[in-house]
Image (cartoon, rainbow, N blue to C red; front, side, top):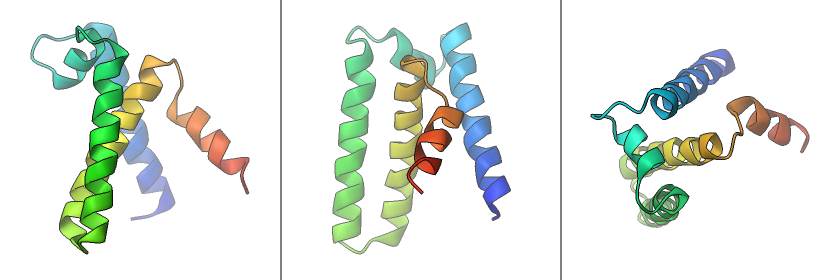
Length: 99
């Protein structure tokens, strides 16, 4: 997978998250994070939970689980970015500024 492919996947995922935020379909897990009674805390708790699961998978040298939990972590992080009116492009800019 090239860098452009990775960018396209993240951009597509983020566009879907924004769409779910804007349309709030009843059958969408993503939409439920935006309307949860705990508010943003529900998504923030998921970021913490997934981060812990990433750590445990890495510690256990479980590559398959590490990748699965990393996907969950990135997804929930993107939801939190969308909740805070930040974008994948904002994240890219932040990372680029570090080089």
